[in-house]
Amino acid sequence: TAPEGVAHPRTIRSFVRRAGRTTTGQAKAFTELGPQFLLPYQPQPLDFAQAFGRQAPTILEIGFGMGEATAHIAGVMPEVNFLCCEVHEPGVGALLKRIGENGLTNIRIVAHDAVEVLEHMLPEGSLAGVHVFFPDPWHKLRHNKRRLIQPPLVARLASRLQTGGYIHCATDWEPYAQQMLEVLSAETSLANTAEAYAERPHYRPLTKFENRGLKLGHGVWDLVFRKK
Image 1 (cartoon, rainbow, N blue to C red):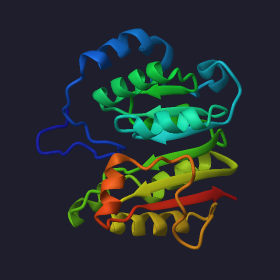
Image 2: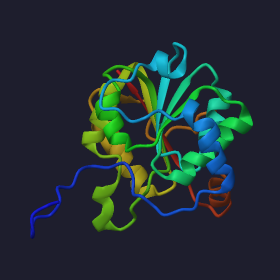
Image 3: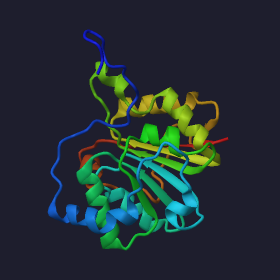
């Protein structure tokens, strides 16, 4: 522990732990499917072919919530491997349950902070893409610095992408969309695929939340940048 009067050093984290109840179905999925689809965090490079049982392009997803979009995307892109990071236990259980229900084989989950996974498990130039959908917007100005999409993390993400690989971010909070656009545009190794915001790519489903928001006139902003 830190000495008295000395604050713990703050490091960038991709999440905030939230309380939540794991349902019986989710707990069952942990027991039955966890051994096959959960990868332990390890501070050494991941052997993708061994982890997925095949050679295929790999996309990193940071924070998948309850896994609804993740399961959909993995279903429509069976030729791609999805390495998904989420620390929220009910969310991990929910995605495991969806994997079982949908017969998916191309997802692996690391229930650990994505920043550390990125730093220690993913070699440079190893990813075909990165998905960051609806990260916590931290609405209050004084909390803006806690937002995930910041220059140091984007530089790290870009270094892990293969040439031609992409970063796809989506948010329903316009000030955060503007920040994402600024930060991604400032990363010299990335190029925007659109003038500003991108059309929603075919693989990203409209969430229930998003459908409701669009009916109320709320926007959703997608940003897709490619590695030069």
